[in-house]
Image 1 (tube, protein in one colour):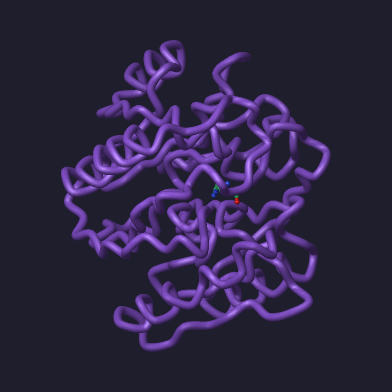
Image 2: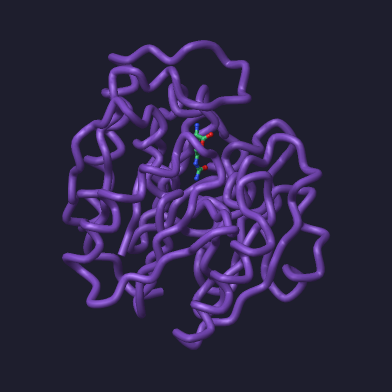
Amino acid sequence: MAAYRKAIVRAPAENFSQGLTSAHLGVPEYSRVLEQHESYCIALERCGLELIRLEADKRYPDSTFVEDTAVVTEKGAIITRPGAPSRLGEVDIIRKTLAQSYSQVNTIVQPATLDGGDVCQADDHFFIGLSHRTNEAGAEQLAQLLSSFAYTSSLIEIRDYSGLLHLKSGLAYLGQNRLIIDERLAVKKEFKDYDLVVVDEGEDHGANCLLVNGHLLLADGFPKLERRLKQCDFHVTTLYTSEFQKMDGGLSCLSLRF
Ligand code: CIR
């Protein structure tokens, strides 16, 4: 996997707790949200990334989850069209920001909807989740744009899987043909040629981990998974994500890496 050099992050707004959630884990405490976000930013910097830090925007309480607003690859960037109407406007500043790094920025257009959290890159292949946020048109538009960059893709149906807001809520690529994966996804034919680390029951949220330049960032609180990943020789950094989990978010959603 190519090295990442930069990441876009966006500070959580004061009204972060007014974002969308289905988690029933309580109301996030803003001071802890800020602390956990800052620890995440520091962890990315320790992985060698230069951060592009965007200011908080109260118009969009979910806007700290920047991953959903774009798909960024080595060959080009694509602005998404988020599936939640309250999040549509989040893309404007991301488009301007990515235009400073990419000569061409493509866009997903109506009637498509697509959230970046539904897009998992595994080398030159992309898995695209069909979720309650990403519709067929969104997945197909993305697949076409990716194919113009010479990437392949496959569509993964997740609409019937409770607890999986996005494909990447249950899937992460760890390089060298290895995926960390939710038990329910593991049986799908699209993943049969990969080495699968299937997440144990009760540790589902751990699947949303993040490999950055050889460092594996993992949410705290999943000891079995942490042990297994260390056995696979990963250098694992655990991070507190309780306040993001309360809003259905995880580690990958908090940045756009390229
Ligand atoms: C939402 O429901 O859109 C946010 N509260 C959480 C988005 C999490 N994003 C992600 O997993 N990629």
